[in-house]
Image (cartoon, rainbow, N blue to C red; front, side, top):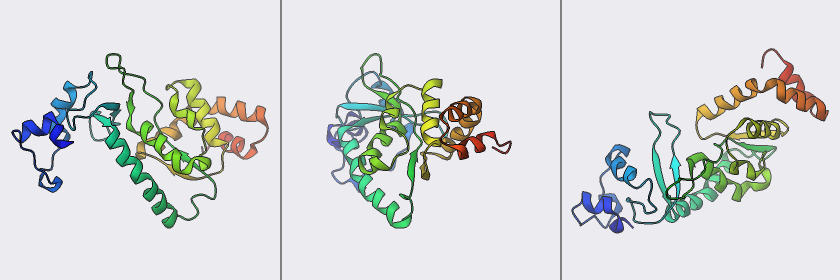
Length: 212
């Protein structure tokens, strides 16, 4: 795959190393230009494969970065999901005593030129996690297919607060903070809906508390 890459062939003048450990350690700025040049295309400059998803970082360390995800990349991520789940179960045996709340970005739509799906990387990774622990998740999987708006945010919060959550999976610490801020923002709406349901008095008590 690396030999198919325009970027690596140019960097190593047509003779990229055959052993992965012989490659230099790079930073995003090293190949930012090559990545940016293919944003509206369908072929990754980094490995020559067809792009299946344009992932966007949250910008925690600065401005948001774009990454072209290909089938090989997705396959490697999927391979890591099973052992990661096993490690978590081994070290946190009570994690499945309740539901798992996965914090993820909503769907980001499509690139208008290439027609390739794009959005925050947490959205795509969350889809993969459902394959291994599907029945334990607090929110329905289709929540990751909808756009970011008030209606869908409230729907997510309703499902999350109505569940007995034993584990929160957050892509970054900021995601947990955003969850808390959204609960406070839609507090009155959530409280009204839960009161009408009449089935979650402990949630109503928490939403009514001045210490929320």
